[in-house]
Image (cartoon, rainbow, N blue to C red; front, side, top):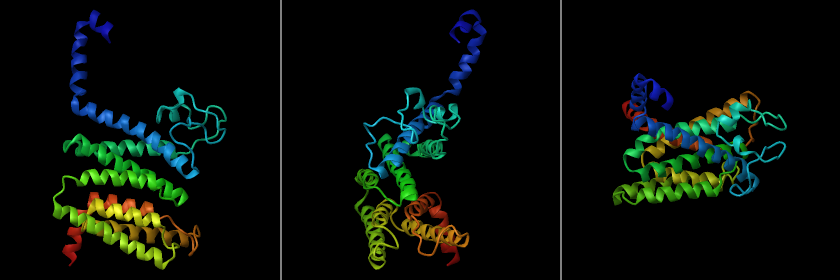
Length: 275
């Protein structure tokens, strides 16, 4: 490009257009995508290793099939997957689609949460932590029916920092929403002796209540139970599950919380209209 500018000065117009296109907003958008892809790659490591009890910090990345360590040029998020045709370079086994999907999901989330950066950069970072840990919980519980305490602690710390500037009345409302929801789930856990839902669900719903407050927590739980029950019926009818088959409820809780954040006010307005 610089050579063309030296010999063809008229190409400076093209460079000016490029600078105008890559304004601050666009650069922030691109950085959010790149950062989201990198974080998504790390979330894949967490999702893959936490259930196995493997070290996810010091142990180098490796192929799940042949166990050989990946080289530096195989670690670029999404790019490496596409360049290798979705296969390991050595054993040629097809890699799970979960890897690029989680990277794309994380990058999309980082972009959609960009408006929170307008509050403060710290606020944006804390929302990214909550979102990232929710992704980890969603897929680990979906695949292994485990809700890792580390991810819950990460969300709890972020919520604690977010709660510092809240007015006392609003803070109390969120605390009550979390405690009451957790008590309800704890009762179900005791009654079913842990067979109806896990204790991790109790801790997760406590955090959801703290995050959403009242009445959005009610919306989140309603959507979670509705979608969970509907999915269970579909799996039973299609013979993919039996009546006593355990189905991870954490993903439905997270989906319900997301629905409450995005559509909660509209759902409440529709409900009040019916009343």
